[in-house]
Each structure stands twice: as C-alpha cells, then as structure tokens.
Image 1 (cartoon, rainbow, N blue to C red):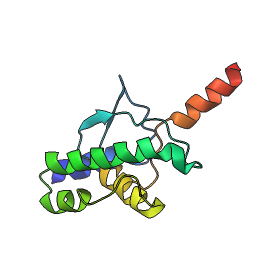
Image 2: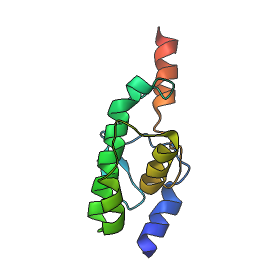
Image 3: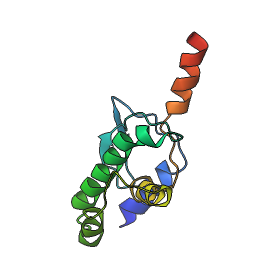
Length: 113
C-alpha cells in the first residue's frame, strides 16, 4: 500500500481545516467534517463519537479491511474511552489527537464578541 503510506506522510500532523465541509483520511478518502465537540464535556462528545465510529467503519469498508471492520462493528459509540478514541483517530488520520481547526474558530469567535 504505497499510496496509503504517501498519503499518511503528507497529511500527518497538520491542521485539517477542511474544504467545502470535507477533510481527508490517511487513505485519501474525503469525509464530512466532524461535528463540534468540547473534549472536556462527555455529553457533547456523543455526536462526535458517533461520527468517528461511523467514519472508521466506512473507511474499513472502503479499504476492504475485513478484520478492522468486524472489530469496528462491535464498538458502542456511546461508550468510547479516550484510548479507543485515540485509536480510531490514528486509524483515520494517522495521529491520536488530530486538529480540525476548531480551536482557531473558537478563538476568532471570542475576539468578535
């Protein structure tokens, strides 16, 4: 999977600000931007966790990774741990704590207020 390695090296450790509401995965697939999540508030993480599990499942299907897909189908998106969230991030983006540019948006909003 040479293409996978090249894509992973090109997008690792970058802010994924997205374009037209989409971001890239390590495999080069475009997926919708994640919903906003306050990582300090578990209640607000539920939509984000659902998005993350769904995108990881779709990634496994698209790359025909049957072993990973079988594992992902057994994950409860309402009970993700920080460690599992990090593994899913790594599977999709090649890093355990990707930045989607949301912090920049929050800073800009605060300056406007």
